[in-house]
Image (cartoon, rainbow, N blue to C red):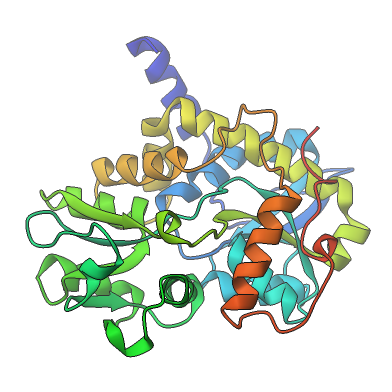
Length: 330
């Protein structure tokens, strides 16, 4: 993209003054949807700002309110309870919630390979295989996708629960603990912690759990069963607008980071925002791909079998209780 076109795209993204968390102006025929995010504002949430700022939700005929979340587990439950219509979630956590009877269903999966990893700092540690973790101080957040992926990793690699030195830290403490050497590695999303480490002038050392028997799914969207029955076309239109915005973010990530940083406070500088966003994009289905959002029975069977082996699923449900491809953008 040439410099003038780049500048124009940024001006277009930054136009307007409405905050994303505020309801859009009601329009005739627009159907209202409430979306709950997986966490507080993070760089990859820029797609929601782009969709709002560029009028993609409005053009799709939906009035959307987006709110910050407090972890995918909580988001899955709140969506299932119909406090929200649609949630941006870690799909593995959504699957575990569905297995427990929470009435929701995955309606789009765009990250088919989990980014769950162990991340250290190159030169301090070598993370080549599961055995290399022994003796290391590993910072991990109990519960949620972090704890779940760690449990499955240990089971898949026959590692006893007491064989690893796991130090429980809340999510906000793991970064400082890693950078200051209080822990040798952290468990978490590779795109997030790699960006943090590089932002601190170091190089990350990464062990991706997907390479060691952890076939979990990453990000996508889940809707309450009631919303699927009552608002199927509104969900489809919202997903269409979000996918359109994701394509814009992929085309001009710098403009998207400029936008979100101008609207809300997110950790890190511009370089970290770009690094973080591009890291997740590399693990995700490109928005222009015709198969964007689509799930397969094979990957869901692998996920369910893995969760059952880990003791996260204790009762059998048919695969179509977990996901549907019927509401994807056409």
